[in-house]
Image (cartoon, rainbow, N blue to C red; front, side, top):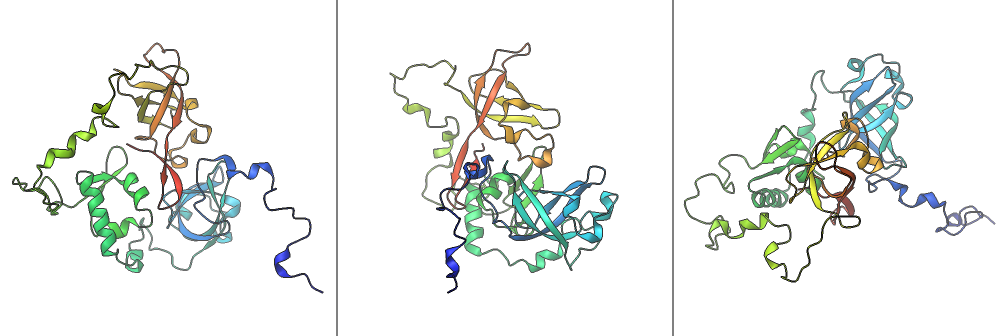
Length: 326
């Protein structure tokens, strides 16, 4: 007379009932981790006065927040960042209602990196070399982007690889804003090396520049019908641009919009609530993110946005929404 195991307790109503707040949690982030999934990573920052820090997971492209109470017992009483920086830990991840990730139940791992070794080089040996067809796909992607791309953009396209694996094939370096990944000099698909009139390896004899001009107009502006009415920006009709600079600490930035001579100023409060963090580490990089701009009355220093709406694009590979970037 035992209940069959799949029945569950009698009081659990039909599965679709659930509390209304279960609808996606309200944050911008898709589910990147399963609840209770154990990940590994390295502690990168710790503020002993405030009792929290961040760790860098091996398999996700974002730092994860943790509280002192979730740290491994051995280092829970640490008084400085030096005592815990670069320690390797395993942990579970919880997605908070605002979509931010938080590490819980952290435990120390057996294999600690040698001191001072920020990016555990030795883990490069344990990573399999990249699949050749994947490298070809990456080369195509970079060649189509003119030989290089913003690393963030590249990482969101090829999300399951580590920088260490990429460095064997490509050049990765830091720029003023973020990082770039490029085909190494002398690579056959790089366009700036010895182009003597031959078309690239696609070799269909077309001159190189044939499809270059598409850059100017987003949707190919030549095909605009002559009857298309001119619409002035106003409530409900928002011009489209990309964030040029933003400083989370200072709490303001600028959007570049074609058709506006000056960049448009925006305060932190113009961003969606879950993007109003004051620390760079808690925020995705917003520079280059495409937005629509609800203009407010001009400030004394020129145009001003009172609300930015971040545009998203669907990423079929990972079945989730990502920020659209230039």
